[in-house]
Image (tube, rainbow, N blue to C red; front, side, top):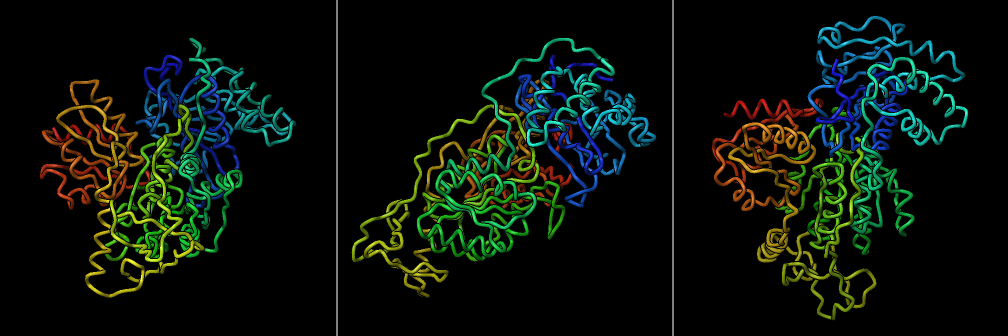
Length: 575
């Protein structure tokens, strides 16, 4: 077994907790993550479930360290198995080695051969026996106590986290959980805690990616949300609903995705910054509505939390496979904005930026989060709000000769809101002249196409379009949630003889082609890393003549996450 304590953390410490539906694996993972936060660590918890969405088996994967954690590692130090129900479904998601430790209950049956084969140490603890001796005793709490010892987390931190996570439960349930936790904690003290953890930090947040998108939306000024629930985006709506009311806004659950996109177009036309959230199947239904928003220059933002596809696909797993529809999916020549948060923390800023750019440029913003970001929970440094000088241009005095779509400086013509004197105009899906009057004249069509294109192309997006790390003659280009694994791989490589540069794209459309070319100029090798089957970013960059002929693609489909070791091996194959 690997006896290194996370308090010594030269590397992050990784724990997986698995069990059948209702066993409390995910709850145990949340408590463990919060306890790590109480001790001063930063961390990340992802979760996995079977195809049932509800019920069936589940797993919580927790990783914590003294530095930010943005991805899962190549293997797990500890597996806590509450039972063995369908554990084989998680075998690829929870890689173990002869450095790993498995905690399990002998009454759960034999340890499956696929787990024994990797050489991990197996330590049996009678979770069920201990729990049965308590009123309402829970196996997961006993197991959590035993895991805390292995992880080097003190009992008081674990107890505080139990109270926080279970605060909605009755006092009797909480007391029973605390007693079960203590039984597991005191059963086997190997290895002893060698040194104290870093100490609690006051400027830390515990937040999911979906909550981060919601916070970014509020910071961006969103006041109306209409949406239809869909996995894995629904938590954005659940988090926003009460908070929109606090800022004078509202959320409406629409009857479907078609209704939700048209509702936010109507609200935005009335002057209220508006947003919807969905996943791949819902985005497909919204495409026609997005075209209406774009041609009428009505700002809207859509947060698309990607999942495995196509069709219903794998709702509970992550995949970066909606890039093509986000960039190319609208019919006609329809330039718009596409963004992708680089981490859970970055989802706050990226969503805020997307909303405010949509408002300022009077266009459509698509934000591509995914299940991995959206439903994972992270302990992060507090995010300070960025003051962006971006807002919608609205006229209170349009004048008798008001031309809503007139070509003006920066191609951003002021909007008038309903009820403004002399400010009436047509805003529908037909091509139009500068007044908004429907027109099929080639000159009007060309003028409006140019206007909608140039306002996005000529705008100065500053340095926010990407994050760049390191410097070297090999360049790793990635986007969205793949960034964490790519950064960790690059960090490992940069601590060896290799020197690697990472370009993580936050803004995918309009593509900042010249800036990318400048960054990769002089690099000997380029590897594009992403989590989908077809290499969508790779081919997109090729179509924009960004990549050198020697560039290669590492495109791994979901549901397995990209891991740093996989990226390192792909890098080594280049050289």
